[in-house]
Length: 251
View 1: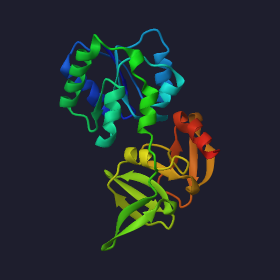
View 2: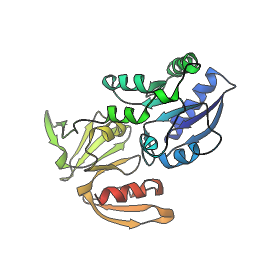
View 3: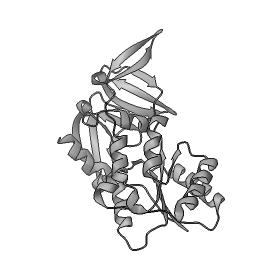
View 4: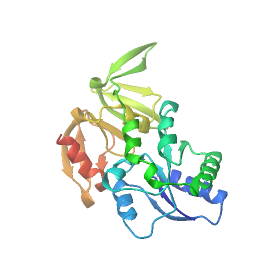
């Protein structure tokens, strides 16, 4: 059995591959891809996998973009951080889903389900584009509750310059250069925030459009972003995200 893994976190992809082969050592991981673009190209080839494990958030965007570009008739097991309220959408529109962080028991359950459904699987009955519509947020988050001294305050997203990951936690940096820790992951925030105002530029930062002061060409098709307020790290956008980033800036 040939399996394709689409996951932009190297450690997560390695862990997933290990769990799959612990389920059955004869299964072949035919490829590990980390972007929408690479996945579209791969699925247009003649050598299609039997099953895809697909993460929602990839290096160059949301994996639902794949279904806008090509028709996919291969069974898919999604890896997701969505809450329980949204999980019925996956149950209706995919073979199965696994919740992050991934565990061996989840892989076993999903593969068992795949084999139960295999004989009756009808690709025309699964509409992955419909799944994307069902999971699209109806309302974007506009405020965050944060701890400030000995109290909790409400912070409007217009005050937020960026979100960033640091030492295993997620933080907010405001335009007034105040820093707050929040309980969401960057993956969570991508689904909550208005995509007109915020863009995930890399694995560490989600930037407000109002924070960006300059953008410069960088090596190998990448972009270097200058921000106000400035950040301690250089903000580099990969060539995979560069086109989407430029389109976002131009909206």
